[in-house]
Every structure is written in C-alpha cells, then in structure tokens.
Length: 310
Image (cartoon, rainbow, N blue to C red; front, side, top):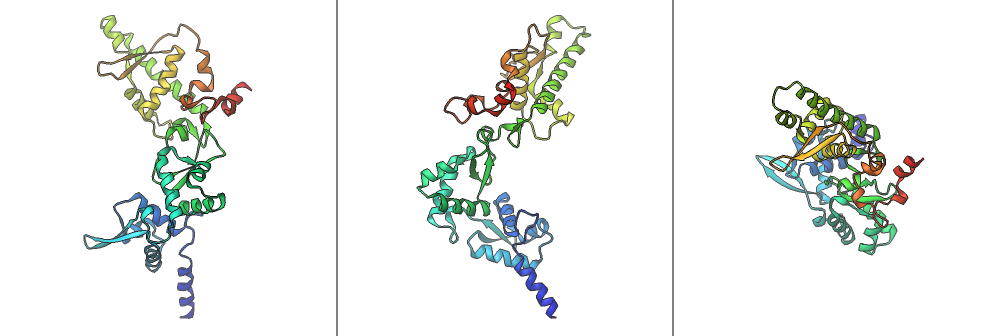
C-alpha cells in the first residue's frame, strides 16, 4: 500500500516531466490547444498523449486552468478547453508581458529583433530576457533563425509561418543555401521542357502548332517535379518559376504569356553562354530585393559571396 502511494506521488510530481527531451507535458498541451483554436477535449489529450495517466492529466489541466491559460466550456455533452488570448490572461501575465506580446504581434510573420523589442518596450535587458523566455515557454511566441543575420534572434507569434525574407524560402536549410538542391531542380526542369520539345519534332502538325505545343506552364513543371519526389519541402508555383527564370536568364528556356496571363516556358538552344549574374549567388538569392548597403541583407556581410569568391 505504501509502495502504491509512493508511486502515485512520484507520478504526480512528474507532471512536468519531459516528453521528448525538450518539451514538458504542459507545453505539449498548450501546443495542442494552439493547433486547435476551437478547443480540445480529454479524449483528444488521451489520443495525443497516450502515456499520460488520467489522474496526471486532470492535475495538469486544473493547474493550467488555475493559471488562466484556458477557457472551459461544454459542447455535445463533453468538456472542452480553449486557449485564452495571452493579452487577456487573468493570471500569470503582467502588463509588461502583455506589452512585449503586442509588440511581437505587430511585427507579423517577419518577426522582430530583441533590440527593437527593447527599444519599443523601454525594458532593460534582464527583465526583457525573462519575459521573452516566459512567453516562449508558454508557446505564445517562438524564435526563428534569419538568413539575413544568423547570430540575431527573430521573435514572432508561435502560430505564424515565417516570411520567406526570414527563412530564405525553399532554397535554405538551417540558414545554409541548398546549392545542390537548386542545381538538381534546375536540371530536372530543363529536362522536362527538353523532352517536351523532342516529342514535338515528330509531330505532323504545322510549324506554328508544333512550336506552341512545346510550351509548358509552370503548373505542369511543378507537377512533374512533385511526382519525381526529389524535394523534401513542399514547392509552390512561384518557387518553380524562380528556377525557370534562371533557365531563361541562361538562354536555355524561352518565356511567353498565355491568354489568361499565366507564364509559359519552352526549351530552346542557347545562343550565348550563361550571363555572369547567374553564375553568382545573387542570381538565385530569394532575398536579393532587400540587398543594399543599409538593408537587412548586404553584400559586404554575405557569406555566400565570400565563399563564391574564394
């Protein structure tokens, strides 16, 4: 009996035990509530966290309710827990925390630097650091690495997808430009258009009709690339058009507009060698429009330019 009591007590004291080495049970529940803004039930929690005992689950939920994280409501005869707006927490959030949250919220999916938060909130470094850590632990905000400045932390709301100007888009992985991935996509896009052109050589239609049939839309190229399964990330039409545009600049592909305003592409025999710009990292850089002397991206500090020159 004493052993069972000690075992139960040990379970109760381990309600903040880590699930996967980095996330506590409370954080996991809060993250689930973020993903389901309409509310989560005990049944949902039992499915998502099967290792959590009912007694432990009840204790953690009661703790989060007492701290003002959730609104409790009944739906279809079941109790649901809905995450409160962090700016309206009854407990656990002081005015300074709400101010910091609103500043980060206003920054949107482009995020905001620590220094800018400190400037706008008029908070000293130590208390601001504590507030940011608290909001991050509660899954209200998250830290995102920026390709523009690897040593700076960008903060944004937890449920937002970072803008491409922050992550670099599909061509970056952990702030590193995926040169090999871009090269493979470049080759496969050209291969698709080249095969389409070769098939039309045996076409008995007139020269104009045969030429028109060699064109392919960016949607067709995207479908071909998706079916190959060579990309670990989901690509979109604008990603493929970025690759196709490099082929246009190389003189390997011709671009024209369809009647509906969409872009069409066809493989051609290049008349000249690739322009110098396409041989540099700038030719494929997704954030080159922001590149300037006083901008978030600058040639002076660009690691890819330095590597290329070396």
